[in-house]
Image (cartoon, rainbow, N blue to C red; front, top):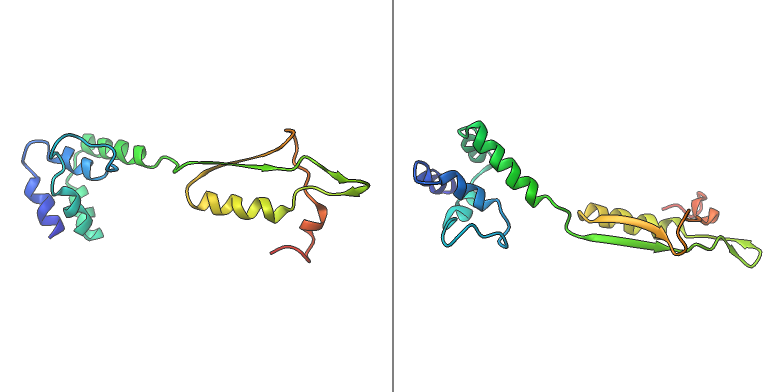
Length: 138
């Protein structure tokens, strides 16, 4: 059903534009009705059908498709992890607990977020040596 819907548009004005519209997020409309029915058709296509269809595109159309897909691959958002700058608590050496930084860092990164880490005072982030021992690594 999916491939048939998309192929029905081939040969009609701007059918490649309509296929590109299906790859855009809903917040990027191409005009009233420009992608009507195509998104549903693309979603219903199997991987093999999609590969067969893309194989029919010329170089210019493939470049447009790549450009459209690159535009949708932007990071979902940004995260700033702010750590301590303190490397002593009285006479006791301390710092940020490694897992309290690395755990969230990789979770956010895996979700497609851009992640930056900084210390309150700027500069190097002191890491509590105790958090790097074999007894505390998870």
